[in-house]
Length: 221
Figure 1 (cartoon, rainbow, N blue to C red):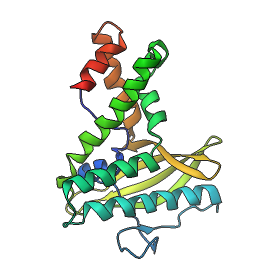
Figure 2: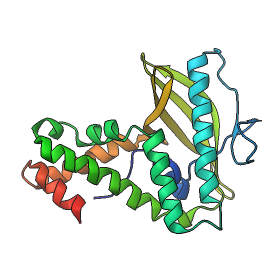
Figure 3: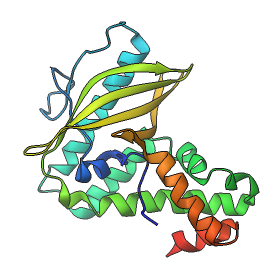
C-alpha cells in the first residue's frame, strides 16, 4: 500500500512539507503575507468574497510556516518533525481526514478500534512526510484563486512552481467553521489525496476479510 496523504499534504500534508518534498507545500505570489520572504499572495478572487479570500490567505500563511522550517538549515530533524506535527494538528482537520480515509469501515469499527486508528493515522502522516524533508529543493506554491464549494468549503487553487520542471496544479479543500479554517483534502493534478488514502486503506481491510483489525496491524508496523 502506498502511504500517501491526502495533502501530500499536506503541509502534507500536501500535506505541508509532504507535498513539499514531492512538490512541497508552499509559497504564493504577489502581495506578501509576511515579512519572512517565503510566502506571497495573489489576490485572485474576482468575486471579492471575504470568506474565500480569507481561505486563500490561510493557505499562504500555511505555506509561509512550512517553508520556514523546511528551508532552515540550522534546525534539527527532531525540531523539524515537531514543527510539522504542530502545523498539521493546527491547520489540518486530522480527525475528519482520518475518518474519511477509513470510509465505510468506520461504521463497523469498535470505539476502541476507532480511537487507536486515529492515533496511528496521525503518526503515519508525520512519519511518512517528515522522512521526505530532505527532498525539499526550494519549490514554491503560488495561490491563484478559489471558489466556494457548498456551505462550508472553499477550494483554494494553487500552482507548484519548480525550477527546471513543469508547474503542478494543487488545490486545497479548506473547511470554514465560523471563521476557523482547516484543510480537509489536497488535490494534486486532479487526484484527491483523501480519496487515494481511502482506496489504499480499503484494499488493506478487504484483504483482511473486511476486518478493520487488518489495517490496524498494518499501521502498527
